[in-house]
Image (cartoon, rainbow, N blue to C red; front, side, top):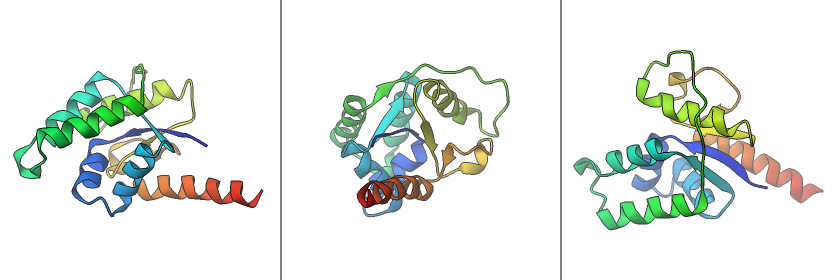
Length: 143
């Protein structure tokens, strides 16, 4: 089973800083083809901008490799214009892309800042996303 997910930048950064973590597992599942990353140009640009900050010490090669893999494995999605305001305007694109993709697939928004988004079932923390994936894997194995 595949899961479509818009991965918030904070989850990507956390994964890259600590591979052996819940966000790291999200990225491992993405690179393994279980989670299909959903994005648009604005999300990819934000990923690159944030990952390039000197405080993270990521080399350009590492950034390119990760973003190339996300682009290769993922799908580009259109945005669904949002009428409501969000606490952080920079989060808007992540929610809009999730809404746009939900017209085609049962997509999730995986974020460490859940309070920045409306309280809806498809906005989940990395730990909640893992629970969804592993619960469904267990159910499939039992069949």
